[in-house]
Length: 279
Image (cartoon, rainbow, N blue to C red):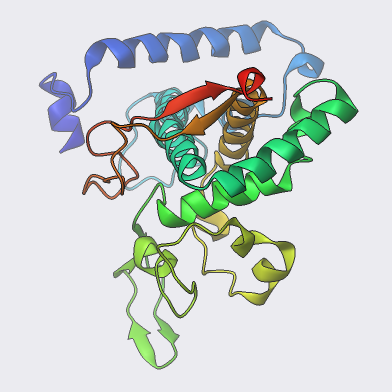
């Protein structure tokens, strides 16, 4: 079906953004080709480039075992990496700000932690945000309440039995992330924002699969570390000068679209107050 749509010139995505990001990836690939080996970072794109099989850039019969990836697959995955992390990360930033606005005591703890780190380091950088465990706890609690993927699907590769349940090979297994994250047996008062659920002791006392904001196992979210870095850095920079508060337009509780993601239904209105004016 994909090849038929491609030949007919039909696309499910807006052409101009895809063209823009496709050209951006192409430019980076060309730059990498002209760099010496020492100057090539060991990142996601470089790993794909090392797996490039030029034979796959041509038409390959379906019965041939394929090794590596084609140039088209490299570009498609790079664009997907870009696009998939943008909307979910932006929504999680907004939803964490919303939770902090509704829970001023938690916000006070984040600000106190932030100010302490800035006083010690002098600025917010990569190392600084690694020393903000309470901010990360607030982000994780937001991801529990509003997981970026409300459901995960996986195909069973071989006949398996789990606690007496037989799962045949080829069956699609649905992992209901939202339901797990709101299970009162795992998370008492599941609708309440409690960052303390993510202390070291609390995490060690729970099943490893009770919290699945980025999936789990070898096929978990490839952008997990980048997403967490972005979330912590953006929120830390904002809270360095401002605090989040509710206003007349704030809808409580926030509404989430029925899209299996954490997309906000309508608009999320908050007010920011300058911290300088309240000190």
